[in-house]
Length: 90
Image 1 (spheres, one colour):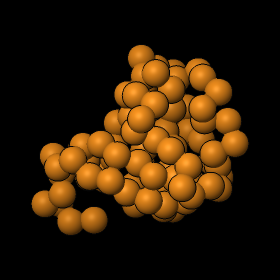
Image 2 (cartoon, rainbow, N blue to C red):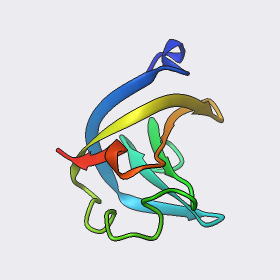
Image 3 (cartoon, rainbow, N blue to C red):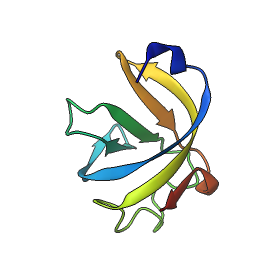
């Protein structure tokens, strides 16, 4: 993903890797690759509508649609998910 995409609102489709990473009570869903070599991360902070809910159950390995603003974190692109309408099954 080009660095020029950083800061832009985007819609992405992809398969979630079969691994969820929980760090400091936040959840990261890996899109395209395995941690720590993923090419994209979907970050769900603990104050998100999705945190701790049943929406995430069973999403691993599924094709999803993600929408949000792309930001770089440690040189890798990610989208922060704060509301249910940003993440849906494809």
